[in-house]
Amino acid sequence: MAFGGRKNSEAAQLAAERRQRENDAPRLTARVPELAELKLEIAEKRDGSSIAHVRRIVVATAPALFVMTCVQKGCSGGGHDLTREVVAALSRHEARFSGSSVCHGQIGPDACGGTLDYVAIASYRAAAT
Ligand SMILES: [Zn+2]
Image 1 (cartoon, rainbow, N blue to C red):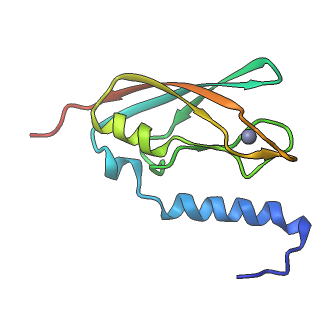
Image 2 (image 1 turned 180 degrees about the vertical axis):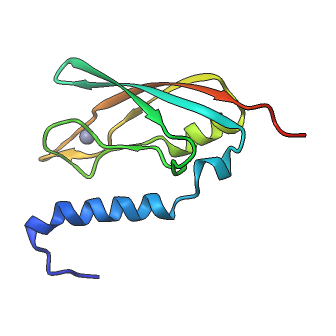
């Protein structure tokens, strides 16, 4: 569906789509009911240096959606979708797991290729009997 393609509304529309996607996604607690706490330590490489940040997930309300935006300047269509592997590892009740992702976006005519490494630290409640 077209909305007139006005450039200045593009960012707002992307944000709205992202919210919609988060609202539509299943809740994390529905996928992994025993999950108590989840923290992601994320390191992204940019211009040869590494940016690290920690993302604490609010388990009670979080969607089962782990999509990170790409930090590379000028990257379009990129990002890191860790949803499948993170949810799979949580389903196995792994307390600590890690992985990495390569951005498939474009910077001008070139492939972005930005990388993201993460370490996830999770704790679980004992399953109710
Ligand atoms: Zn990128």
